[in-house]
Length: 84
Image (tube, rainbow, N blue to C red):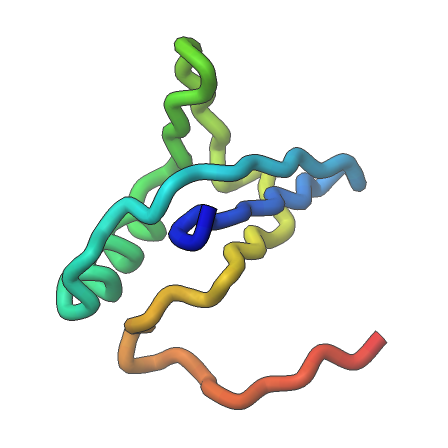
């Protein structure tokens, strides 16, 4: 679906989990605020196929969301290229 988003959560133990979900917020002006609020929590909460997952940020190496949200926090660095 056009509005589906993908998230990959890489854990500090080297494993990862991938999820797909529908676009959550249509108003671009609210995206950065929601992202900032989510990142200020100690855990990520996901409703997955009738179950709740709580993922403590202390176990997370990084989170990749694609496509990139339309609006990012002011401190985001834009135009970055990944070098491997």
